[in-house]
Length: 253
Ligand code: COA
Image (cartoon, rainbow, N blue to C red):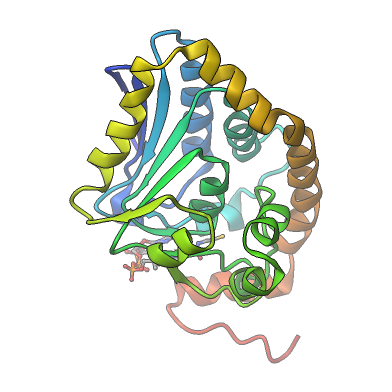
């Protein structure tokens, strides 16, 4: 099982557990995460959601083989169900970034309420280098969070960045030693056991409700271009280069 879920002491934990493929996410894993978020939303015993990975790796993003063989066909596909579930969650979501967070591994953090990053983690949104475009409304949220200059470094160049950079540019709350990041994130999630859930829910709706429609619209606009780019010769070259463990060559495009 590549997604482990458990509810303990008011916290629904979603653990990405596919270390042999660096926690790359398949459609089945997105579906499991979407189902887990929806179940947490409906379970009165759950006061907060914790998303975490494995030591040294949060997630390497979408499974590139899946991208090639089973590209998302419509907005009903599992990845979009996951995005919609996370954007729509009224319960607080805490992320423990246990290591590298690539692609959607970083963009999903934009939709979490609290983000704690291991001091060993590197984050990156290398969509352009893969012949793709940003997703999960990151084309809107990243420039809004950090301004267009720093967004250009991360989205146009795809430069990787540290947890400290993520804090500085507003993606994360704090950097913690690798051995402490999950426990710290869990302690923050457990604080919601002592807070009134109705007030938490209404506050989250007030904070995010007005923007949700806009985010879903951007997700949808990005998805159309993303789907075209997935079939592009540029993306094919990037994916083949990844599996052949070589640098891609875009000189002929
Ligand atoms: N999709 C499919 N397989 C992936 C993957 C992904 N996103 N990320 C890693 N893997 C696989 C590798 O192909 C390799 O498989 P193999 O053992 O069968 O050869 C295995 O996981 C280990 O990956 P490797 O690259 O050797 O690990 P690393 O520690 O050197 O590097 C990363 C880790 C995360 C930096 C690197 O794997 C990476 O850059 N992955 C791709 C990230 C990416 O571009 N994601 C898509 C964003 S849209």
